[in-house]
Image (cartoon, rainbow, N blue to C red; front, top):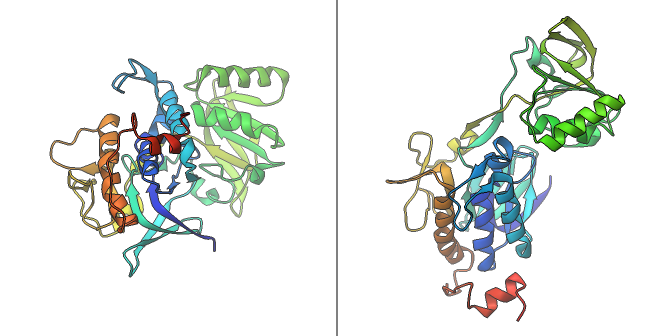
Length: 341
């Protein structure tokens, strides 16, 4: 069982979580982020990467993915650690006031402070309405890619028309024996560049594309052997040994609901001084928290991250005095950020 330690464990890797890394880094706190998705950015990156956002200060318009990219660049000096495709499934209070987190992949992470920045909660993949799909889940039907090698040499069917479906179609094509992309229509919601690359590969015969919907699966003992696709010209049988359905995500509190925190309508109440939960040392920032007057805005989450950091520092380094400094004039902050003298 892999075990590690950090100052602050952040659950989630969306924009508010990323900005928290910056704020915590200014106070010399090391961060570890865990997210169930396969990349940073939370719902911004997963659900609407190209959608413009108009209320980020100093940016008249910025796409969700550009915002995530800029935040990732901003936190580079602090070298945070990321664990993707993973969920914190359990949390234990230790005698010294710190926490031990257990993930669904068997990892143990000890931290002095826990920050829940999980947006609306943990993203859970939507199960497609395919009869009998449950029998294949976890053995030959998967809702995320944890290791590309697990798909090497397989006939892979990818279902969907968004960014995840197109991204994995392109990324797995070199390792899979054959890739077949299935979508209910010939138009896609994914980035145009990804769509164009996929269509070019289809024209070269490097992969297959089938318009239609999967209506049935065949196989034995949890191992797929084929899928039935109902398309405009009738039913087609496709040989496959692996399937990746990307039918979107739902958001649930998931294991967080079992950690003994006070809850308010599926959100976590916090104070507005520290954004601490009912459990000392556990904070909640961003869309997942609740307090009177709460606004579910990214910029509100940024503010919450800044105030949370002041309180977190007192827990991580109780013997140190918390000194407020401005980034414009502090030479010590400039040194941390790599700003030239």
